[in-house]
Image 1 (spheres, rainbow, N blue to C red):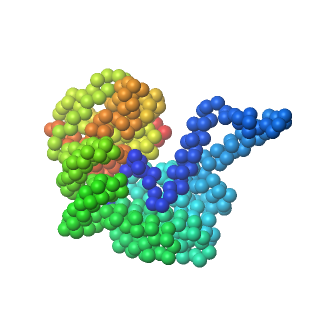
Image 2: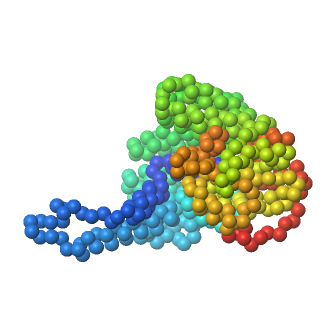
Image 3: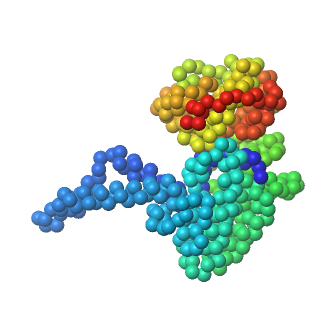
Length: 455
């Protein structure tokens, strides 16, 4: 299994094959919070009066209480990766335990196991442990949904939900490079594509090409070249359709986490050239992101430019750290895996800082105050950059200019630069980072871990 395959939080991290039930609940939850911040909605008089009879104030209160209770239920369900109606079911307390029977219960458990929010709340100390949990979760989703699909009592809606969750689990297993996943994923997808239920067959047929893309790490070089050529040609033939571009971009992301960074950079450059060849306005911003990703992937062996503003409002230029080994970390306080990695980075910083190791954080937070509070609470000693005047420039979050320049569309993204100013790796996370620094400075010495690092 690949140690670190994909980021846990990305601009498209809520995309789930079929319907994204947890995401729908999140949207509903967010909407209700926004509404709660405004003045309570009032019902037009024309709707609450009949003739000379006015509605009683208690009617408004009952409606408000009902709406409040509904919103609370949606929020509670969303936090568990469930639908509101799932809360009425008796599910095992252990997320990783499937119910013995019951179609609604099996589907609810599969939804819960498919939720990034649920997995992000599990206690893990490394990316390796999280990937192991993801592997376990998606294998369980496969088991649960296959049971539902094989049960003749499942109605059309339940079967469709099961198929969507099953296909999504296969995609996740492919990203984790689970043993045998390339064959099993396509076998399942092809089987569902011939299902007698039209909606399921249609869904599976539309997802097969995407699953083929995710098998790239397990293919021979010649097969990879053929698949990439087909993918790029599809974009032209489809006249730069959204789906064809999405598929081509997914191929780039898959290559990015593979073992051939040169191939990834070359492919993304070719895709950027292709996207820049059309005058379609809707494609322009996508082309810019792809060009940025190509720029980032091509950094290995080359220098990196970073100019920005620190959270304290001071100008910063990466060139000021000339002669240092530098970790450039694109992150955010709301990103669970980013936060989970902080103790490791602090340990490395403490061990190697006197030898010339520096860290530069580039925050994709949506506002600066939570970032400042987080840095102070966690006692983070390295510099962090945040765009100035974001209220005017709208440069916060994913619109961070440095992130856009390097096509960062998922975090954490960590880039390690050598003392000679040349990038060593654009995947400096977890054990990869530790090994790279050990190669430069020697084995990691024993460092006493501070209690504050576990906050």
